[in-house]
Length: 322
Image (cartoon, rainbow, N blue to C red; front, top):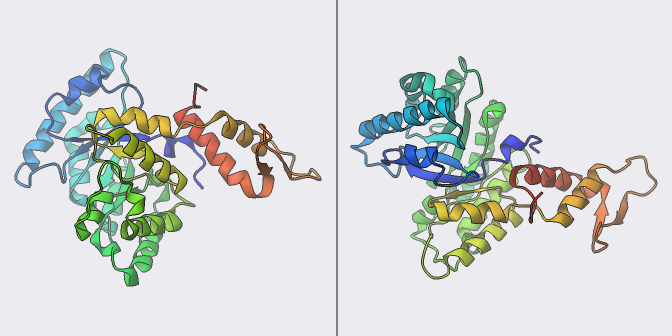
């Protein structure tokens, strides 16, 4: 299990087309608050014939953010670039030059056996001459995961590859909409993706294979207005958290607060986690009532939960303020 808060603190990852005009001003003026990460997308949100133009617009935005960060204090989110192919990673780092210092990593779409080696090799190359690690966040959304006969083999083979560069893997991400698209599914604002059994099965398998060694983030929720969008998102976040996901991809600033709120730790969980981690392992008794005398705390079976809970508390805070 990951034991450093950096893996848990990507939090709400706000997606934005890399060619969005005004994104630099929004960041500099803290339009989106101070508790989110930013993904600049050069893939699905950009037309195939607009990539070069989008890259140039993104460079201009990042240069403006970088220059402003040298002059005044404002919340600078973790910034990630979603690329189309491995070659783009090395080229973009060279193109950005010193500005690349504010890039925390790259998002690797449709991560599969066909592109995994190239992506990992590119990430190793860009990390050869940097002051701070540049991380990768592969997205599991390839249609190759649909076939039950191949899925387990693919997931474990990809894990073997990622394990060789584990220190560079910040998060595992999942592409719910891409997987739904294979079947022609689309959930409504009152429907959780975890109720779509063919998709939920894939998400569960990803957690089973990767959840012990990596932090896995929840899929995008595409509603940000209209009847029931907030209650629908809250319900899916509850399902995400219960199933082992941490954080979520968001596509509108209105979603950020709800994601952060969903992952805050309750006072009871915080107190119990602290009690479990502070247990005298040599004690005759390794079980006791919880801090609120409502449930059982058992040292041998709740230690991993407790460690994870404390990481979450550091990353997201406690409900009501920690």
